[in-house]
Length: 477
Image 1 (cartoon, helix red, strand yellow):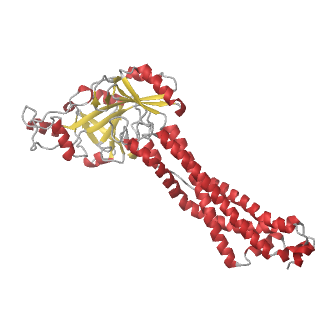
Image 2 (cartoon, helix red, strand yellow; image 1 turned 45 degrees about the horizontal axis):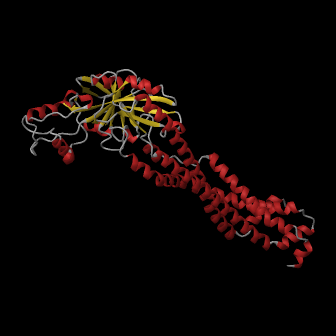
Image 3 (cartoon, one colour; image 1 turned 30 degrees about the vertical axis):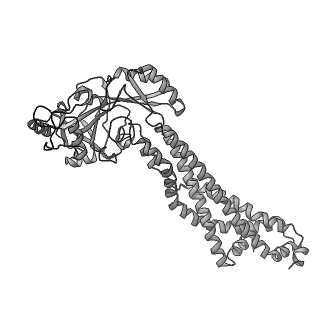
């Protein structure tokens, strides 16, 4: 009988014990593989964060942010100045507008309500649309409007509780060219991007709830300033406020505002995280502290990346610990089997079997058990790895998500749909979109490591016993 056939037969000599050993090994191997897959997922997430989010700076007019504050507006000339700063790889300009439903404005004028101020010193009544806002003002909205004198009766601007309530304005944002044809940075649920973002167009991307409120789909028409626009795509920002918004190209927004060359904010991307601080200082110096405020909207991302690095280290340590546990199980099982078969080993030695043959027999038997455990363990890892990776990253991202709720610019969800801080992506989306799949390469690498540990665990006791002289082994039986 060959060594292989004898090893396979010995592995199933005691079926109950074999089943128990395989079950225990499957748990240890499954945990080891799951932690390895989770480690790879966290490693990829750290790289993604470093590449896509951690290098983003936000430039607002000095003393202003979004629709609040004072100062002078940013210009396209300043965007060109920012693009020339060392280590800056791209500059994306945006222009924000507040749109009011034309029918509601007419009703407000008839009741004596005054218009609420809009961006760039415009009255919001000058930017009208056929759309109805997806969010009603409610108690808080009407209270804020009353406090600012925007909902009153008569010409004195005094507020009354009887003033008709009206919905919040719709945020329209013009975005620049650093958005690809599929709407990069926008979680599109239907349709496509706007195409050429450097030219004025009549296409728009609408939030899902805004489109639903107005009964619109991809291809539907609506108006802004009596100009007809076509819905090119729908996006989901994840919040009611974020979905009460629409996006057009930057030139279109500037034309609608009648403010060519003016920007509400700039999203500046630096070529690497290592250069962010230097680029921020150089950008502030180039634009002037009295003309622009440069902030790192994702500053807390460094803490998140640090936390993820810790998670990566923990997952790797857990993988090594689970791997060591599997090796220890093999070692103990082989010690037990070798002690049970001392007489068999003595007989093999007496008839001239070399040490390597005896060692190989027990190694092959261990590998049969490990192979069975690996099959079950790989199945366990394929189901558990995603949940483990998500749990590990969620625990480290909660702090970052809390810090990002304030946003970076006065736009829905912190600047762009989904709270992404800009067309180039954002931490809140990246931290919650973990993809941890048990790829064949990772599983194969993990199983190879398990087999390596199993060989050592089986070979050590077998060779130690094989070195004993046959007469000593047989005498002890």
